[in-house]
Length: 295
Image (cartoon, rainbow, N blue to C red; front, side, top):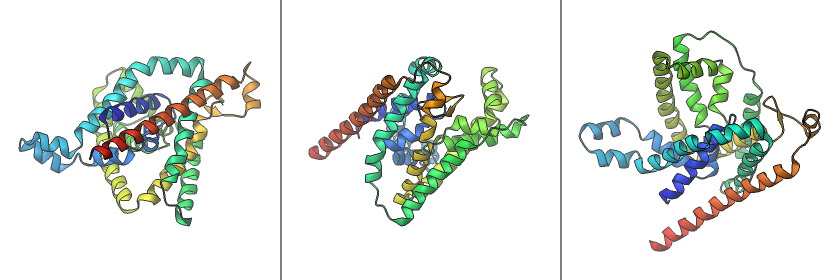
């Protein structure tokens, strides 16, 4: 895979991570790099550490698929810094158009992904289970609490797992746990101990959960992907373009409090999202065929 392509996919993942309720893991799955990402994260282990301690830096870099991770996270970080203000402005002033764009992106990638799997009765049941799971999580109500220090560690471990799960937003999980505001406060006020505990929880959760996902994908590849695809489908209601107070609503309900449904703009943005995703997938197939022809 061209690393420029990986970088471009990182840009798309970063844009998704900015939007509350949209998971970068969703884009990673739909863009075909999810399994490689999980394997690369899982490879950050004692073997890599041993290579570093013995001075085998190149071997350690290759072991963790370092160039892939560098290009991907470079794209994510660049996208976050460049697009954060624009996405925040659209969330505030043009939410229907922004949600329509992501709705089109996800919708365009689902059919090719589903066609790559071998379907049977069990996998269809897992698909339905994923849909139900996403709907249940999406309907949970946030809790309010006075956080203890140890809660930052637990929140980090749980939230990072959600961040690499397609269809589930890590920020939404923090909100459900009642830890979104405390973590945000710790960041803005540079509270070092809570931030250190949160980062440690993230590191432990990421390394542990990536090993579990890697094992499931290795042993039950299509069944695991069927469940994950179901989670993505179930979470699509979170990117429904017409929302009030963060909750998807019908056209009629939305129109009661707004002058226009922006149907034409929403359709155009959804078509733009479909075109972007189709273009990315087509370009990837072209690059892959060129690589095969060279070999």
